[in-house]
Amino acid sequence: MLAFLVRRLLQSLAVIFGVTVITFVLTRMLPGGVARAILGPRASPAEIAAFNHENGFDLPGWQQYLFYVQQLLHGNLGFSYRLNESVGGLLGDHLPKTVLLLGVATLIALGVAIPLGVLQAVRRNRVEDYFFTSVSFALYSMPAFWIALILIQIFASPPLNLLAPIGPQGPISTYLEPDQLTALILPVASLALVTIALFSRYMRSSMLDNLVMDYVRTARAKGVSNAGVLYRHVLRNALIPIVTLLGLSLPGIFGGALITEAIFNYPGMGFLFWDSARTRDYPVLLGVTFVVAVATVVGNLLADLFYAVVDPRVRIAE
Amino acid sequence: MSVRAAVPEVPGRPGPGVPAEGGEVRVTGTTWAMAARVFAENRLAIAGVVFVVMVFLFCFLGPLLYRTNQINTDIANITQPPSPAHLLGTDNVGYDLLGRLMVGGQTSLEIGLTAAILATTFGVLWGAIAGFIGGWLDQLMMRIVDSMLAIPTLFLLLVLAAMFVPSLPMLVFIVALVAWLTPARLIRGETLSLRTREYVDAVRVMGGTDARIVVRHIIPNTIGTIMVNATFQVADAIIVIASLSFLGLGVPPPATNWGGMLSDGVGYTFAGYWWLVYPAGLLIVLTVVAFNLIGDAMRDAFEVRLQKR
Picture 1 (cartoon, each protein chain N blue to C red):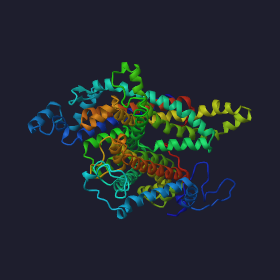
Picture 2: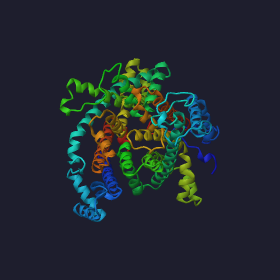
Picture 3: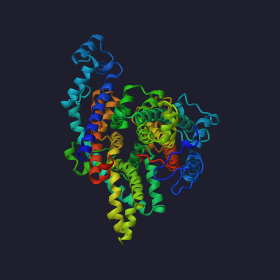
Picture 4: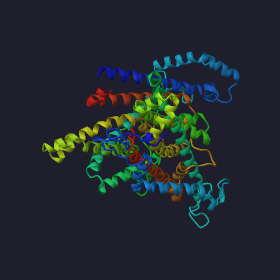
């Protein structure tokens, strides 16, 4: 177990190192260089040279990279000249909101998708199964932004006019106030819907994989009731791959959050990122990219470790 | 290469030509024939194929039968409801919508297919080489893949689309740049088990080079995985391009794609211009569903196990 842990940790470190190389290379690939991106098209060559010298961009590439990594290690993710604020400071405002949105939506998605997957597996190839399989297939094949806009059209416009079409705009401490809470419903729902479509498909096939296992026959032979087999044996084993799925689908969920936040003007990290992409605010783009990538790596690592804890076969097979 | 060598063996299940337990020999035809038979039994998949063919005819032959002006805007005739002159009405700058669906579909399909082919070719080679050579090179190549996979697709795409003006070839390149990672991982995994097979030793004994083993033996044996993954990639690319268009970084006008049409159209939902929203949206969903159905059926036919989906 310890060897497995150490190996996975080292791998994750290597991947994070790789991510720093990628974001560094992306900065150097900026058309016209960093100076041009920050000072604008009207900057004179002298100004650019001065900026480059001041920020060390005239040094050899490897020195610049070491400096970049040193800055990252000190928690300095860059500085947004457009918003006149450090990327770290911006993330301090925006990141908690995204974590909240993702967390709530993912929990709801799990809460719906797991029972749904069980139902589909138990009633496989019957009307219920076909219905939910088709619905999740369709949701899965829809652009996420369209789902969100259909939700807005149904719930946030006449005649129903039940909910707000924009997410909560205040600081995160006010989210429990009634109007902020209702504003949160549609962003969470649209993100959860996409995730449910993905998770329930997995849950269904994971249940089906386990239902044909030998241990199911053994349990039945010992006289365990149908419900007992299902919930005490099959469900518990079928949930294990869902943990990995959770880790693997983290990038996808981040992407979904980006689109959801863009549609509902939800001031999270995804919205910040989208806004920066449209205004070509490269320091923010690259800083956020780095943070999201680290979050993904850590999420995958946790999923793997959890998997190894609950399923000893993984450790042995490695 | 003999046809028999291309038969992938499924663990726990003797393939054709391989003596089964008890010594009897089961020969039921080539992989392709067997796969085709399983595929043809899947009615949903056949429906998917028929739909994809119809969409291709609609997009590429349609403009020959239904001629419209897709270059110049027609400000006098914007957002017209469907009429005999414009079968599906006109959009917010006066383009005929049915004609626009054909042109936009060409872009969506072209990007989807080209990106999928590019990404698959590169990813397969990368994965096969890494898995076959192994050692530190494998570690290095796969950590590169992992590092890129760690950055969520949409984030990486937005950074790239913000940096480079998204022309059509640039979009294909950007989408492919992100999409090659999955096939690289899958093929590497298969190569790890394929490289220890006896036929690899046999080629080596006969003096075959490493390049020959990879290109002529390893890769053909992963064809099921390759094709299944490529099919899913077309579906994914269509959605990704749509999302990019919605986020404001799609193909520049007068070119368009279904995603761009949909995201332009949803702005007019509340004005009641349904023809600007639903035709494009339905075409996206149905085409993506069709490709996913085909991919699912091929996975069953080739008995491929993918980590994703």
